[in-house]
Length: 234
Image (tube, rainbow, N blue to C red; front, side, top):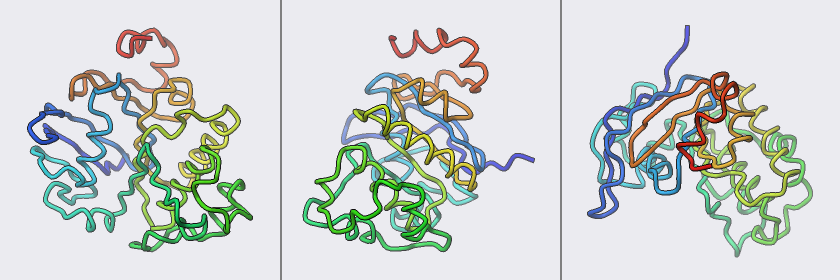
């Protein structure tokens, strides 16, 4: 039987006085990779930030494994297993790769150790003493993901993980996602690269103006890619 991990209903959120999310509704089952698709400004990143508690002005409901995220402090949200890898990656320029990796505290059991991370991202092996921001863009993305996996998070929010990356690095990220899925992790993916999304996700939600306006299974989207073109302006 499918186990639902995240349920979001009638979610509204604001940046200051700007009303961004207008009643977003969706769900994610255990072990799924689900994408949020849409044009820039549709509310995809805002949804992730609202779930993490980065945005405090929110209404509606969002429950993770039965816990009310909107009533939970951000540091306690992390302890529930929800981890966020932002688009900007957040690599600290004054710290080495090793220091960047171990900076976030371990908040739950079951996180990856350094050897497991090196198996997942071989590009990081042997780079411990290099300043984090001297890595290539793709390696910085790997480091940003690895840092969250070490904390014990098993529900990962990935915001534009392939943006601006070379095709060979995109393939490495895809392989890593496949491994994480095989290990039972749950992932929400914000992604503009539709080919990458279709190759790696189970279901897709389309956002427009802060609302979920459609849902596709991966099979349906593969069968008729033109269905997504109108939404994304491809």
